[in-house]
Length: 416
Image 1 (cartoon, one colour):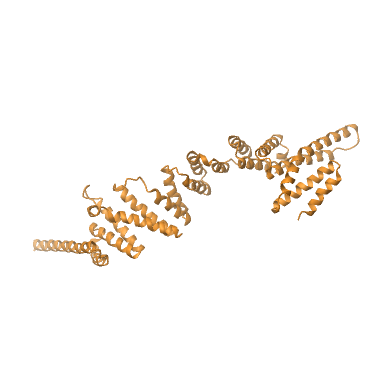
Image 2 (image 1 turned 60 degrees about the vertical axis):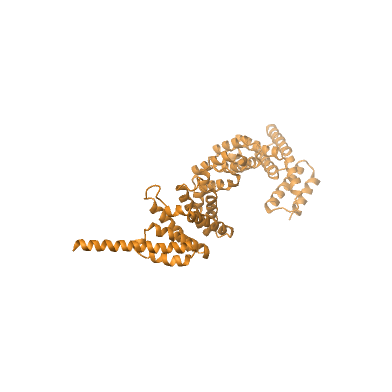
């Protein structure tokens, strides 16, 4: 009895297998005639049987049928189901001996797999152009997955898909999926794609790591950027200043080295001079540091040597020298009495003040010339212009030219 039951069970199994094959033949027939709706109806019945969940042939035909219907109906859900089926088919075929894998796909010259890749790429482009960035990202990621399958099975010669990778990064960045953008940009960078159109990717990677406060990684990307795109040295210099140490002594030493190494970079020279100037004015100790003052004066003169008509440069150096008058005036006020020594000291200090007035005058005059030539002034420029006019008035009072001093006082009052 047991043998008979076993035989009957085996017969049923063979019959069931035959039914599956017959049903798939029906699906194949509909596919060959391009009747994909009918093919889907028959295929869905086959796949409704849990025993067919891992049937490689059924999954392949699902990929074919769903892909073609998805294209016809612009159905993204069906397109995704098609790709999922194709991936499952490829995974199942891996266990077969080499030479016997993916035979159904090979028989159609891998048309469906290639078409799936192209469809996702084209849809990604359409999404991107219509600024539907999240959808574009999803489609480019699918295109990259499909490309990986093609590449691993020796169906494409390219090492990686540059365009899809690039646009997956762009789409991720535009949809604010910054970690994903970094992932794809890193692929481009690691594959040493040196194209000036991609400089923005390198800047993104530097900025992204700066925002994460990962200075070491940001520096790594900066170094790579400098090596591959030396023509953008000004851009990379801006980043280098971000990595300068906080310690003022070390910071200014490194800043000075950068300025010397880039003698034509006006922005760098100006930023260095401004930092020094602000630091000198930040405290009495800094203002009385003779070494620091010489360093600041040299930096300001360097700015003006590069651009004699720099309004910022002329203003800063005039104010830098003007602070010497405050110090001299304080020393003069401290001298008491009319003794010969006191009189001599006053004469000495007044002579030094005259020298400072003479030293500052050309820069005040240039500042006046630059500000007065402007038809409209921003609030900060207007405030600076008032300072210049007031100091020119003080200069002419010092030179005992009251009419000239009054002229600049009038200009100050007229300035609205």
